[in-house]
Length: 539
Image 1 (cartoon, helix red, strand yellow):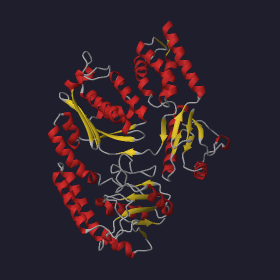
Image 2 (tube, one colour):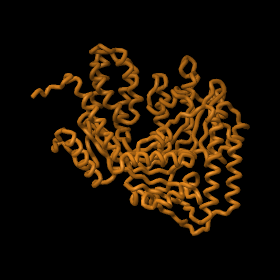
Image 3 (tube, helix red, strand yellow):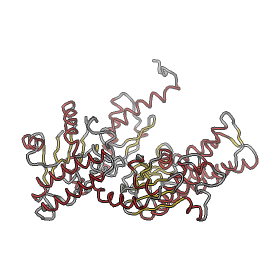
Image 4 (cartoon, helix red, strand yellow):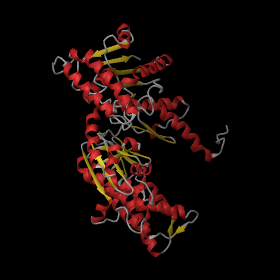
């Protein structure tokens, strides 16, 4: 039998990776977080029993595809495991990646040897490349100290021996300390508390910069900043053209905000709205031009000090009105817009505010789950309970529910469209396709009448109030309607006004038709998810 690869051994990794990606996708579709690299697979589950089931499923599926499995190389459920030379630990609340002490000692020794050889002359280019590549993928934030090294390697392609410049030598000296200090801080998988309260920064090329985080804000002119004691990473420095660019100024505004409010953001993943693509990329990847590295390192140090993870999110300039007014030093108009914004905040997230109390969701997951996908999630995953989730970018109206047990806290405006798409998928694949959707109860609504008429299709759970109150007074509902209509009128963007209109009509209809019956649960959110009915589609 000819066992040679049909396209040569060089093509084997690419062929294997196609199989690997397909197997990983198959496992993830069944709600099992899986990572694959060539013939190595790694799954993360919450309990030992779930991990054992996932391992058996993976082995059976790979065997079914015609591959032989070496059971001696299969590692059972563990909380500390070495995968591709990296220690993965789930002994805390998150899954972290780190280097063992022996490898750290090797890295420190190699860095010291490279520095010593560089002082005497040329060093091996391959030794430097392998050292930087391994460390930057494991130690959190270390890419900030490898950028100049990688740039130098790119400029010396084709050489075996190179003379290291002093900037690379300085980074190697820092690497020896950072590799120990931040080892184990790189998080592979976690469920951190996401702070999605409006946090935005902005900078003007000529006037100043500012930022706003919910109710607090700051602004400063460039002239006032120039009077303060200057630091090496401050903007608008003489002799440094890059520090005058708008990209650098936007990044500096982020640093100023993190320094001011870092102690209040401790222990959270914070969503920061930025209207500059360059600054957003640099904050998200800890990677940027060489001239930006000192400022990026300061942002990184502050985040590490307060245990903050920044999650940058792009926002159009016209939608970032508050931060834009601060950067232009227009305080009178900012105060007016800020008051209107605080009144309207509860309605601005109508299409993705699906946060359900964790206790409530766990009860649903036990009764109707386990769920494999969250069909209506915020882009920041602030309201995610499943590892796989769809936001308005993926759009549950067009996604394939086939083979999933989906959970969904559906927005008002697209409830029926999502349910219709799910039913199409359900007809296409009856077995294994299920869902649990949180939807409104509207008396006389055709959708609600359909649910009641098909008890063999829909299972309905109505939750009474835990407080014993009789419901909301009609005066409160009318006051809420007046307030939201006022916010709608003051909104600048036409799309925002349309969202307000949909939210107001639907929410007030719900309050009058259902909440006054005393069925409002205080543990559920207070916007489009203030609904007390769950419909489930059995698999």
